[in-house]
Length: 132
Image (cartoon, rainbow, N blue to C red):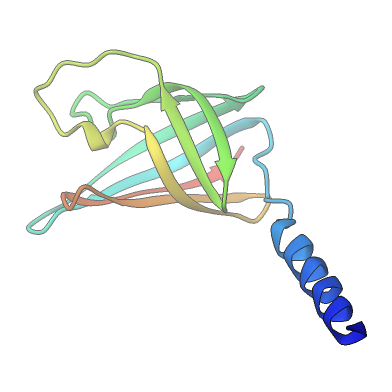
């Protein structure tokens, strides 16, 4: 009986500890400038961009050729991923994955921000940015 209680106690502690996630690296407010690259099966396209982060909101600059297509809205962190919640409307004449929208993996070391995702089997979308 005593062993059974100890096992339940240990199991409870393990479940509690595993449910506590480490705090994720948050982005500091500011401007991040750098490059965007999309890798399709047959081609790679690049462009310059910047992302403004402030008070839980973002704005990504676009280029005339939509590499990238920009975006703006809010963002959240969860499970070591960042999700951009785009708020604009777009025409249907280009690859919408070029808009900074949806869930991405990311790394951030306090200065360099890398945001990347493989989207819908279409391509790999990567932002390599430096905090200004």
